[in-house]
Image (cartoon, rainbow, N blue to C red; front, top):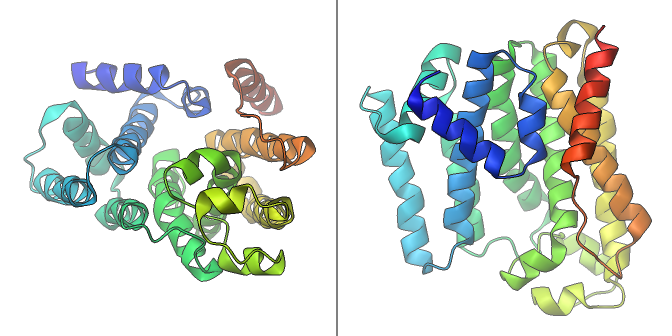
Length: 279
């Protein structure tokens, strides 16, 4: 393992994400590629969620487009740049999907994600999560249309679950991802994030969004063929972890929203269970 790969792996493990344990099941080269993709996404997240002014954030995100062009031209620099170059070259990853992720982060920074229309929310999910799925599929060793459909559908399900998990945190950042249509159906006219999340009818809108996420999980499961299931095992682990998280959020309810995240123990248990199923 190269020194830059070790640094990226340490970063991913230190993040405390369930992603780390799901990807640990992959062979080393595939695992390193997934860690590089994850680290890229985390870096963009940190830019979008950071304290800098909007113009500075947009400039920093656009700098990543320049860095990707440099990587494409064989001028990768820094641990993450080198790790991305290795992943892209080894697994023939599509540069356009990295650009999609950047575009999704720009939607956050520009303030577009404040009670968006449902179609805009779908586009956002496609960019920030579906693109990650499409980058992951070749790393897992799949190239079938079904595996791509699975990646896009699961990406939407995971992102909707993240939205439901982080409602109050996002409101504090001036963001409200629950779509305009669901707020209207619940009788909520306000659009200020902090006002909306404290509205007495907000739980109704959240439950409708949770049903949308559940439908996406169902559709993702149906898109997996028996031929692809073994190679997609890390993604199926993530699906199991996040579906359990969605179930826990729904049982908890949407009025008293205590923080809820999968723990390391649960992530390990799910990973080991998937390993047992493969034997």
